[in-house]
Image (cartoon, rainbow over the protein chains, first blue to last red):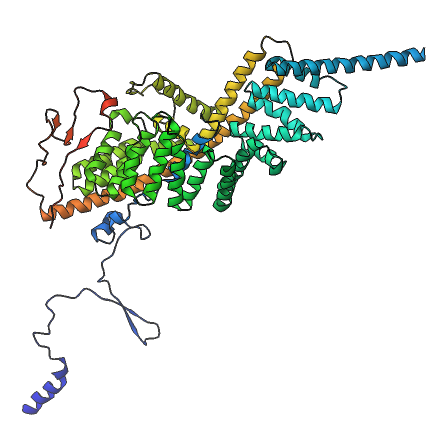
Length: 97
Length: 511
């Protein structure tokens, strides 16, 4: 009986799991795809959050909510008025009285 | 018999020769007596007489050009001048070239000027036209963006005439483009000194003050910029243009109340028919900095109400094929309204519902002030006035000259109308891009307002709801909702404009 018990312990010792090691939360589902040559197992992890919609022009409010953009840095604060100064150039020509 | 025929032939040609000389003398005499209309008729008749010598023809063309020039029919005077330039005569060619440069300057005709410049050397010029010649070379260099070359020509022009206003203005503008702000400021001061004895609201003086303030702004000397912006008189054309820029200057030096006071002037009904999208963007930015979210969102809404529809209209205009008549009609509708406005300065044009143009009046008004269109439009108006004047001068005189002049003016006016239509459409495209750009900026401002609102709500808005106001002023006209203060009785816009004082306190709560 003792020998049977020792054999059972020998085969199960690697698989014994403590309560502390037990994960409290179920892990997210994992998708497994097999490489054609069976050398490696590829796992695609879907735990990253995804942004739906057009990836080239994601919704500005969504990005703003992630605090990825500071809009006040996008305001173009004026540094010169050259275009406006050019627009009154003609006033100083002779035929402009 | 044969000898008699030869004798009659010789006598015939001699009599023609004598008649031509007499006509030439008559024309020169009228010219010397300042009877330019009669002189022009005589010279034109002589030019169209067959069998005159080349020398006489050239002389007659030259004096015809001078007579028309003295009658201020500049466009028409250029035609005989060009004929003289194309001739083989050296005597009148140089004088005609000098005159043509002056005529092209008066009309703003670049093509005519390029032609004249291609035919001459500066050593041939009399002192009178040297500065004009170099100024025009500088204009060509400026348009080609060769600023160093242009500055070089302008300094030569100023050596010849140190008080040349166009040269000083273009020199200062070239320095600004090169970001050589100190030289730009010095040049504008020189130009301003030329107007020391002019009226305060003289347009050139006002715009020089405005340009000088802009130069200080570019040099980041915002306090000095504010000083010069505030010196622009309220009854000048430059005043309204200066307000948004003064708002930006106050923002740069952190004076939000002063900036909001200025912007409030721009958003009174007195200025409701002006194109000012930037002022609404600036207003929203300022109110957001002060955490006044309701007012900031109202500014965003005002922008969308005023300009979203405008963008659709402009898109509609540019997407269809527009005729010359359509473009000219838009210009004429706007100029009619402007003329009636000038006649009654107290008219605020409250009711624009009967405006006939397809493009909103405020857009056309700003297009007419755009440099690309303004020069062509001014030249078109000048030629139209010349056409009317030429009919007055020559209506009582029997000659072929009036039909000759009519042909010139009809041709030029048709050409100018085509140019106007092309430039009108170009400026519309530019305004479309402008509005699209400000719409984008307004979106960024709106998202920033939402962000700031969220962060402030998180911190919890201060319990203080009434602004702290000074005790010095009389509060009889205190208006609670906007913290605005009217120091006047009743409504008289011309007094109120520029006198609003924003008294609000800082509304942001620190963490």
